[in-house]
Image 1 (cartoon, rainbow, N blue to C red):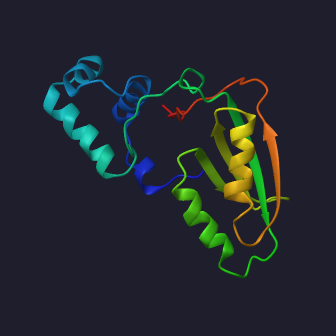
Image 2 (image 1 turned 90 degrees about the vertical axis):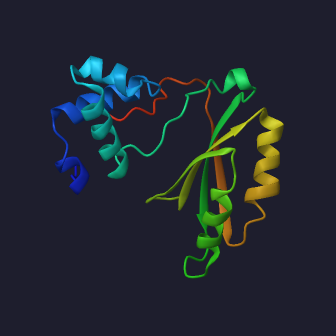
Length: 161
């Protein structure tokens, strides 16, 4: 795996701190310091440095999509017919503003983009495809796959020791 400047500047304490925060992002600097056998101020400084380096991007609660009524998880593969026009760039800007799109990746292979999309049911996903995706200029094909069963879904990044 590739390294970058930020990961080269992390010591064992930083890495342990990151693992603790991924397990529980609500930990205060005092609680985190206690787990790391540090006082509050140095612990807060380390956390702040990791935030400033961009290693810690933000904090959030992990929600259960089904309990919030999102029973459909779909993967949409989008292909463009013409890559030289501004259509892909315009598409990316549209996608950035859609809360039901959890992720969008520009990929290699048959598709140009792979989207992870939440919907309340099949009908609402169908509406998303028709009302949003099919209306984007330059798209030549859309292929959808629906999740039948979720085997693993994590957001934690393995932090090397």
